[in-house]
Amino acid sequence: MAGRFDQTGCKQPEVDQTGCKQPEVDQTGCKQPEVDQTGGQPPLPVDESDSTGEMIRRIIAVFAVAVLAGGCLMVLAPFAVTLLWGAILGYCTWTPYVRLSALLGGRRGLAAGLLVLLFMLVLIAPFLYAGANLVSHADAISGTIRNWIDNGLPQPPDWITGIPLAGPAIRNYWDAASLANPETISELRKLAAPTAEWLLSSGASVASGILQMIFSVLITFFFYTGGEEIAAMLSAGTRRIAGTKSAHLLELAGRTIKGVVYGILGTALAQGVLAGFGFWISGVPAAGVLGLVTFFLSVVPMGPVLIWGPAALWLYHEGSAGWAIFIVVWGIAVVSMADNIIKPLLISKGSAMPFILVMIGVMGGAFAFGFLGVFTGPTLLAVGYAMLRDWTSDVSGDDSGVEA
Image (cartoon, rainbow, N blue to C red):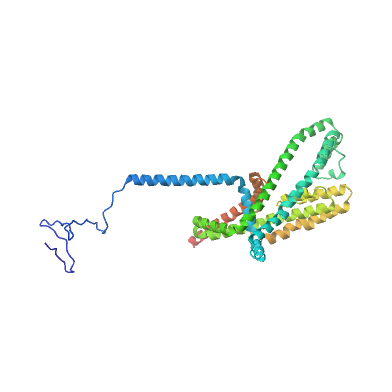
């Protein structure tokens, strides 16, 4: 029986005499599958075994990635600080590297090698010289200390008494030691062994730090030659995490790193080199060691004075009044003024990092990462501080916009 048609010409479903809808059949007489009101096929039954298998596969994949990542971190952990400092050096000197490579006709390997050699001369050579200088004076220093323990200290200079507050007490203790008082000599001998152990461990730590720095400088070569690929990977990974703000965050971190390296560490290096040069030409012994100590104390206000001040007093006590005056003038006019001239020029586009964070970064970095932590500690804190300031400023801007 043919189906009925409505006014639009569309075929109406057939119904039987009871008013029930008859199933449609095709031309072959086969029953057509019923569809829901949305026109879709009826839902298929869910196979719970397939769902469980898919979940197990995902868990295994996540576990495999976690194991791989953990293994990579374990392998890289001993070199983490070294790699970080190498990356910082490569990033902060990337522009000179590009310009030098262009001058050399695009020979990137040669440009990278020349910069690595320059780093060896500027960063590594002063530390090696200071270490060699200290080793060359080790016998004389140990002999002098042994003589003091056996025969007592020499007579104290007159200027010791003039030290405010502590001068008289130091003079009395020195007089007792200079008279070879058995009780004082016994106390000095008790201090000799722990002091020797501390000096030995400190020397080993510094030597290990110098080796790490040499390795980091060598690694910089590979950051130069593969810099574009590394930058692309870092940009892509940051974009996956931070989305549209990735470019801004990378630019903020890069500007902060350059500001800290150029401003704080660059100024400290300049002050250390200038101080060491002044000690050397004035005849102060262990000039390289004193310049190295000045480098570490340069992050502290008036820190270099703690080195060149006693050096000037020693020269005056030795009868070299002219050289003592020279050291004072050199320290004030050259070494200390470098902090007020060089640092603002270098840090002008960097991070205005509070002094307390610089101190915490230097000391905490040294405790956490050793010798290289002196450089990487304040750099990491500066980046974190800049990110925090940027995040809180965004929140403040959103709040002001809501209130308006």
